[in-house]
Length: 88
Length: 152
Image (cartoon, rainbow over all chains, first blue to last red; front, top):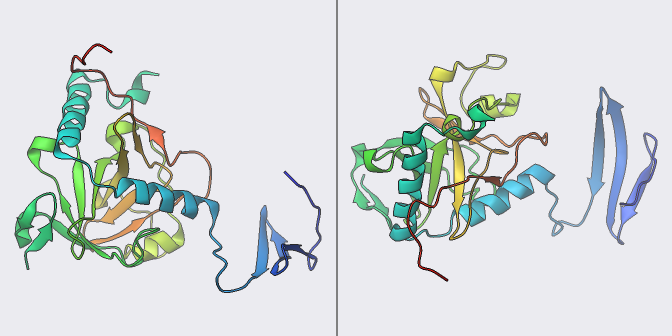
């Protein structure tokens, strides 16, 4: 990972047309300003991961796979091993 | 109005709890109306069926069914989207907290990074995406081999 130190008011470029400016630092948080072309998608990491997870989760699940999953989850619940971390 | 679905056929209005995601979900920002279906035969699995897209149905499970001491974090923005007054921490009885599952042929994971939180009174919901790295968006669910598979 490239590490760069910046002070408030200083900025850096990513590629030719994405500029990231350090606007403020307050209580363990930094405020960034980003200048980028409209077509550049900027997402917080966790939102991007969730978007990917949602796309995966939205795929069709066949009735057979769902029936198997249900059976296994109910088996675990019945055996009292769910939630698993209770027993760790 | 009945909701057309790919998985359950046409479901009557009273088949589940209708609710709204005012902001949609990441990657599905235009999907704001869902119905929560909780058939007895699949419990504890539940389904979040889109009202406008018959083929969009998330499989979910109450977070406390897979993680007994989940530490829910709701931002002020999330609370507002769910219709809570600012600054008030909701009681656990006021909300349903669900993890969306990704069901694969070899692995099933739950998104504990971003649980779906439904405010039961207002019927408004949010996918509460956490900024910290305490929980994974692909939390593995270890399932037993309850069926004898064919020998390879």
